[in-house]
Length: 314
Image 1 (cartoon, rainbow, N blue to C red):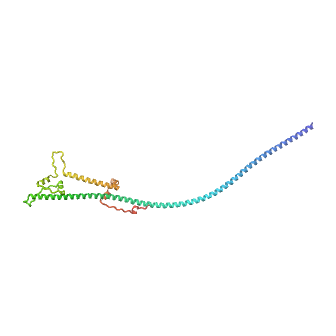
Image 2 (image 1 turned 30 degrees about the horizontal axis):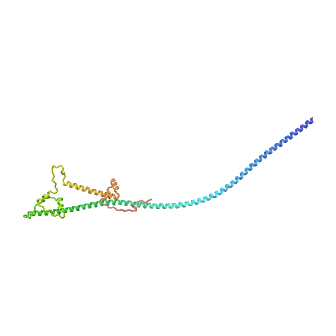
Image 3 (image 1 turned 90 degrees about the vertical axis):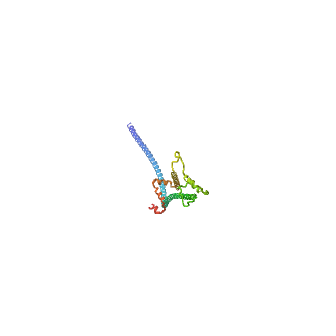
């Protein structure tokens, strides 16, 4: 039994050792498997990393090629920009030259325009003054002509009155000499009578023979001509004399003449286009120029460059 027990103990010990070895082997196999699995994962990870690196290398090569192409394009763009800038500078130079020439031409045209404007203004002023002077001269001529016509008419009337009076005096002398033949050298004083308008017209009318009147009829007719017999108690009798009537008629005729002169002057000013300017001058007290025109002053136009532009244009 003891031997059996010892043999069983030895077998038990051997079995324990065998179990222990098996356990160690199994643990080693499990560890190996685990290590192999970890290596496979690392290998797969390395493969994936390699693939990623290869793909990135390819992308980097493509990006390098694109960058090189862009550099080439950029160099070409720089060349184009340089050419464009050169063309732009040339164009700007040409434009500046054209602008300078246009400025000089515009300045010359402006100078010519200012000279022309000054000449036109001077000519307009000269035309205005000449129109005023023409109006004044026309008015003076009209007044002189009317006065001359009036003087001629008065001269004709005076000559007619003189002839009529001479004829009447001759008739009265013949009548007196016919009634006083015994005293040829004696002259009878005649009453101082005035000739009337009706007698002048009657005696001065052509084709009318002289009327033979007696001395009493002639004196009565001369004394009764241009006289009106009125009743002193009549309230409607005239209260003015013939001289007052003549004065009123003369004043009326003068006013009519003045009205005609003013109307003609206004029509001349309106035709000349200076009517409103004349009114403005009269408002501002520049009517002295018109008075100088009335005195017969003459106007001359002298336009020169130095007079128009004492200072050079800039």
